[in-house]
Length: 429
Image 1 (cartoon, one colour):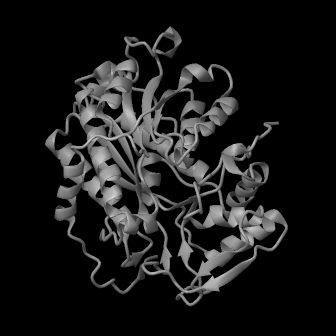
Image 2 (cartoon, rainbow, N blue to C red):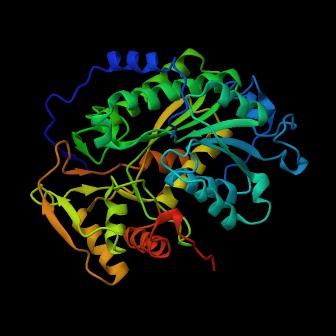
């Protein structure tokens, strides 16, 4: 069922002007920021469907013979090698673990650790066990550092795909620091795409966001909804989507791209060893609630209780980070199995959960009430936002399996075991 919503006046943006600004920033290099089981086809089968990856048929399948200093084990030759930018972050680290647990992938992470910790990858290795050191590699590299990217791609020449998470991601901060966001997110992405093009890496998964939709006209949100991002962060995601479409159109035989628009990731790995560890004051609801529950914050502010929603508080589509990570695995599997062109896909549950419902879920998980106060609405916040995830089910054979109960319980398990985030010591039972 779709719900009609009054259009948001004045939500359009000067896309071309800002795109040019982002492309201008891409010329500068810096080191300050980064940020389903599909069978593997043969090279001949792959090149017989649209030519995607034919410039580099063996490496596009992750089957190249090792040629660089980072590739020495013959047993690794049959694995697909994926570059994960921003892989030490919250979603990136969970995705690395899910990729490695399939037994089909080897992962090379680049991150400048500006807003994350390498400890997250150490936790991935501990959970993975076995030959983890040969399956997960980390290099400290900024996505705007062209020579640094070239060095990584030379060291690991079998890289045949990229999952791109790296970038700045706080809506409020983007309003205060728009040039940084255009520089890092747009400039960094164009630099990354240049180096992937030069290395003939065809498969690309982009971490986009539901923020590209802005004020929704209809709910649930379909991928063909009007795109009207209303803040610099959302605009960087929207402009990068346009850049990817343009790049694919310019050379469709060389690119195979999936754009994943996900909604509100929360939760943590069920082991309690991995979770969200934001630097400074959390920008998102769930990590703030978790820090209140563990005593790091006094109380939560609920921004607005007079929305046109069942309980008056904002409604969002919260998705468990493990489900989201599995969505990235499904996306990569799809790219390796067939050409898709350049497609956008929602990753969400399709169900809206209010702020008060989430607070109630955390209260049940912890056994204690969550202290909160009601504050004024924040400018730009919308009443409700949730996905139509049917395209992901049809195209990727993916759906979210975990509900609010698991999201809250796993979040609390992580926060209780790691009250100071990755600075804490966690014992894996």
